Length: 171
Image (cartoon, rainbow, N blue to C red):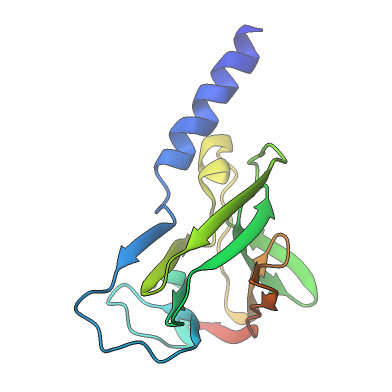
């Protein structure tokens, strides 16, 4: 029982260290465009989008979903809302949820008109990998970055999809 309690505290602590999914106010942004804006990018430590990284360079994966429709969007999911994946040679190499577990509870949320969801991960190690001291390193080579809603994200019956990004790690 003590181990379960300590593991639960560890998971709560680790998840507290991740950048959270937030709804951001967009009052200072141009008027709405009556569409759902999405962005999936690989960023360096200066937030510059790119696909070629040196092996010692920090790699961030970033997602944005912005509601620029004239109405609120409702979405349902279970478990974590979304996850990032890194693939190498058609094999899953790392995710932002490695060594982490989640309750499978269906949740319903609203993304209000003029608001956005942002999520960012410092790849390739999850907080679970740090806790288990089982870190991975991106060695030089070609990779594929994917953003996967763990369940399809439907906004008022519209499915939001993201294309994978090919990237390379060099010496």
